[in-house]
Structure formats: C-alpha cells, structure tokens
Length: 326
Ligand SMILES: C[S@@+](CC[C@H](N)C(=O)[O-])C[C@H]1O[C@@H](n2cnc3c(N)ncnc32)[C@H](O)[C@@H]1O
Image (cartoon, rainbow, N blue to C red):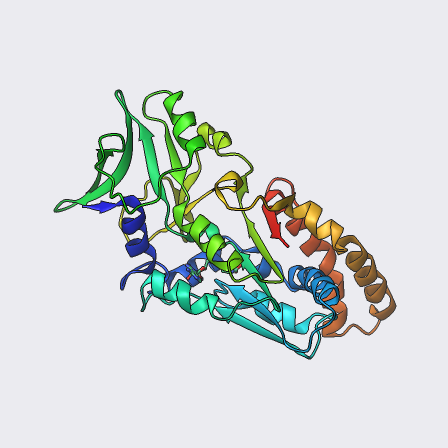
C-alpha cells in the first residue's frame, strides 16, 4: 500500500514512469503544448523580466538563470536567443531524471541557487507528487493506493486517529476546515511537495523565483472538483489509478498552500506587464517591412501575433497563474 503521493511519484518518475521512460516529454508535446513550446515569444518576454531583476541587482557578472523542470528545453533555447539576453548570464536547465530520489535531487538543485540566481519553473509544481484528503462519513481520511492483481484501488486511512506518520507535515488548516464542512466524498489535494520545493528554493534566498502553472488562488475554489487530471497523447481522464505509468498525473495548484505569499498575476497580465503587446507590434512592423523578401526572421516576427493570442487566451494559457517571489 502506498500513500497517493508515493504512488504518483512512482507513476511519473519510477523506472517505468511516465516521465522517466520518455513518454512524458513526447506526450505533452504532442497534445498539450506548454507556453514555452508555443514559440520563442514566451521566452522573449520572460527574458525582459529576468533583465529587470538583473538590473535591480546591479548587473552582476555572475548571474544565473535556472529553469527547473526544463523538460525538452524549449524555454532555455528561447531565453538564450532573446534580444535582452546578456552574454554574461549563465542559463541552466535541470530536470528530474528519476535515477536519484526526489529528496537527493532537491538537495542537488538548491546547490545552484544563491542571491545571484533567478529560478523559473514553468508547469513544474503541478507535476510534483501531492497527497489527497477525503471527507468520509465520519472523518477526514487520506488516500492510499493498493495494487491488486489486476487493478489499483483506493484505500482510506483516517487522519484523525493518528495513523499518519508523525514525521509528516500536517495538512494546512484551511484544507482541513474546508473538508470538515464539505459533503461526503469531497476530495482536496495537499500540495506538500510543491510547498516544500518552493520553501527549499526560498531558503537559498534567490534574486527571484517565478512559478507558472494552472491553478487557483484559494484551496476552497478546488471544491468545485476537476482539479485532478491525467493526460496521455490524445486522451484525458480523471482516474490516476488506470494503467499506472502510462499517464501524466497533474493537479491545479492552490496558491494559498505555497509559502510566503507570492505576488500573483494571470499569465496574460504578467506577459502584458512585461511588454508582450509591444513585441507583437514590433513583429508586425518588421514583417511588413520585410514581406517582399521574407527571411526566417521575418516569419518569426509575423508569428508573434499568433503566439501572443495563444499565450494570453483567457480560456487557456492566459488564465494560468504566475507567482513571483522577490
Ligand atoms: C510538464 S513538464 C514542464 C516542462 C517545461 N518546463 C515546459 O514548460 O515545457 C514538468 C517537468 O518537470 C520535471 N520534474 C518533475 N519533478 C521535478 C523536480 N523535483 N525537479 C526538477 N524537475 C522536475 C519533469 O521531469 C518534467 O520534465
């Protein structure tokens, strides 16, 4: 029997896991483009944000941009190609390969972080293993997974009778309160790993941390359900127990479970704040100048308008939340 987060870690990052076996990178790219994979414009705008932090820090020579959970590397490529990229910056991408424990990995990666580092995590937090709590008839229980001969099943362990390992973190009080008052069968995520990951980065006092993900500001907004989703190629499901290892498992992030109250904007607001509209206007003008003899660069400029529309779409990527810790 495994607690849900341990089960999820195995499904995604175990030896046959969704990400460790390579299905993950291909899977998301085929069907669900991340903002970084829409095109270079996202990295171009993020580079403006990085540039402003670098200027605020007095333009240090040793300045590192660390992309955690860099996946196939689209953001790294775009950052390095951006106009505002400074040649003195070091841009690093790290991704959890699954061959060391998540704890060891977390320790290794924080080794890169100090006050001249900007840390960016795009769609990382939703992929960090989370715990699930459920309101039952008599109590609040935690979900475990038992693997039977042909199917995995949920098993509920009481949180209140002390069955939870005392070394564990307690679920945040707001999660417990919402569940106390919820109807029987309601479930909420406890984003323990996401919260610990943010904490471990902030402890190293980076110049800034930026996390972009789908989510909500307050946990109670997740009472609507539909926060736990699984993806595989062209399919979407909400049953993470089905065919373990062949599906991505993700959750909406509830910002109130993360430490130290970040500043929060929607992705559309954030990208507008950092000049996406101006880049589109510039791209259009360059395209018009060069349209008679277009080059690869002219097409890149023309595509900014479509990229911006996708990145700021309020029904999709534009509604993602951007959390900034300065
Ligand atoms: C949804 S993908 C996002 C990829 C990329 N950031 C993008 O926007 O295209 C999430 C990535 O996080 C990685 N990952 C999961 N846990 C991690 C951890 N603790 N540290 C670093 N990377 C991690 C996974 O291997 C996966 O490649």
